[in-house]
Structure formats: C-alpha cells, structure tokens
Image (cartoon, rainbow, N blue to C red; front, side, top):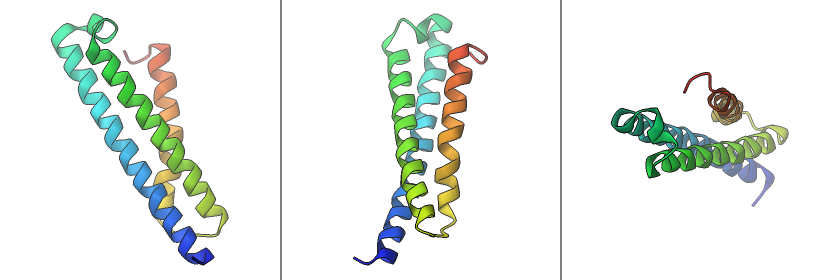
Length: 107
C-alpha cells in the first residue's frame, strides 16, 4: 500500500467515524427525549434510560475523537478530501455539547 492509498483509506475512516458519531448522538438524544417524556427530569438520573443515553453519548464522543485523530492524520499527509472537515468539526462540537449539558445550561 503506497502513501496515497493510505491517506485515502484514512480519510474514509475519518469520515465514517464522524458520521457514526452523529448517528450515535442522534440515538442518545432520542433515548434522552423518550426518558424525559415518560419520567420527567428525574428519569434521566434514576433509570436505565438515562444510563443508556449517557452511554450512547460517550460512544459518540469516542467515535468523534477517533474521527478527529484520523482526519488530522490525513490532513497532515496533505489529503484534500472534503469529508475531513466534517470529521474535524464533529469532535469540538461534541466537547462543547458535553460542557453545556454537564454545566446544566440545557437540561
């Protein structure tokens, strides 16, 4: 495998990880919304739905970190794939959402 094939594969992995992170974030939001609808604010802290929403969110953060690292690797290898910007943008957004949710601004 030459260097060009390696960076192309890396950019595909980065974009795929970013898309998977967005899907995991949507699943987390759906689980959280369902828990809030059924049990109110207390359901997020005292039920399995809250734990599942938190687990899905941290899976999304992990996937976005992997996508960010792979995109950074591909960008440093001078790859100009458009999907890399998605992968590099998802991780900072996930961290911002984590900070906002944990400080209690939204929930």
